[in-house]
Image 1 (cartoon, rainbow over the protein chains, first blue to last red):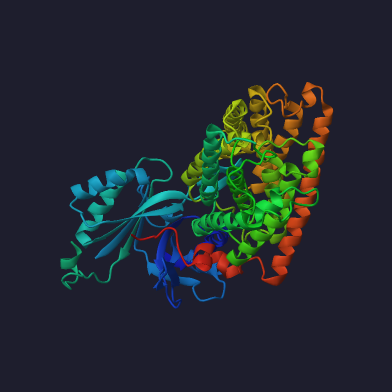
Image 2: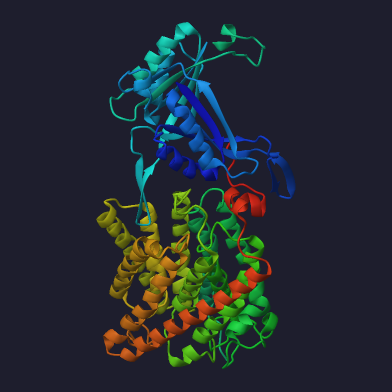
Length: 113
Length: 113
Length: 411
């Protein structure tokens, strides 16, 4: 099993969700984060004072999947989130040793869906 | 060392915290997230128009532990978070390569507590 | 020689202040409905309208709206308030200083264009917005205001009844909202996801400020602290309450739940609808006007709008134009000389002619305001462009137009 973590543009969330549902990936966790990679961040002005390089709002997705779902999930995220501009985000894939469903105590591939 | 990530119902956070403290697990990181698995999401109504399938509010816990604490941590989370209904959440266990305490530069099992 | 009445003057000045508060109130009403990346753009658009049109009004706006003239609009003889002093001007209000009437009307001239911005929220360039609003205030608001309320205005001569601005405020702004929503196009990605309002408590705060300010708007339009002001006050509160209840009930029937957003929207629909008739109707018609206003706005917003597919983002047309039009026509049904001897009887009191006059005024205003709004929009679009680019829209207007953000994520 793998844990896929993706950082995407906030306005792309709906598209990514739609592509994930199409790929039959339903279990996702979404959170609001700040960050930037190659983007320089944004300039803000408060009472005439300029601040440069502030972090940008991003969305972080966490998706636990079986091996067979890793590629479809990555493809779905790219399909939904790609604009071609700097700032589209990143996908990280981590090894997931165990997965437990709290309601039933089931473990492993059974629990992940 | 392992990184335990749990997605639980927001109203169960206090129960889970209590169980974790009882199991002597004190270092936890909590964030507010959105998500759903087998639950269908929630219906909202805005000016007479219905929206279905919106993501639900969830709480995400991150807990770094030594091997010996993995089972007690999982048990504590299940004990605190389980209601028996769909939506109780999931627990993920990942391998944790290194852990460094920023204040002292200590590494590994010493730093984790 | 007309003498100034201190009570009347105090009431009109307080009413002017109440109406001033409606523009920031509208800002919160609208601001809560947009996504959090755009709330400052809404607050700023409302706030800059307050600044910009306050100046426009004293320089030439008041003159072209209210200076006596039989033509298209008022004359320029009151340019920079030349001749508009503390002496009463009996054509408009015999017992208060002329400048009290002027500043009361200034607040109407401010909030009317601000109502439109709900239609193109989340996607208009700030620079274009400023030019659009200034042109609109000059070529739509001022002429229609003159026709209905100004000395020499042709609709006034015809005998149209518009106590506090159903035609002048809600129909002009509401139909302009439809025009701009049609030409500016939908927000991006709308078919996939209609964004939820980011802060409904702000919507409720805005509604409360609007309701409060509306007492100045309607009861202040009596331009005196008298019985008509009181009956307008009562009608206003009654219609707002009926509107709120009515929407809650329809939410319940159609969706199985009452909603805060719906109830607040219903109250605003009731307030807009009672505006033209407030000083001409008694309390039972006020209940009917509020109930029906919510009913038709509910249908317009939740049934008809999705079918037609235009993106009037915050329902400026769906709430203001629809309820304003209903209110102006209802005035032609329910108006009574027993309530206001200076008014007229409506259809239900045996005077169908009044209803016909109201109908003509509505029709002419809808056509004129729609057409001229389209022309103004096209001029601005062809010269500097109206819409932000796709990337700016995605990032939000707060960061791209103003370089500010409303909420920090951390600390």
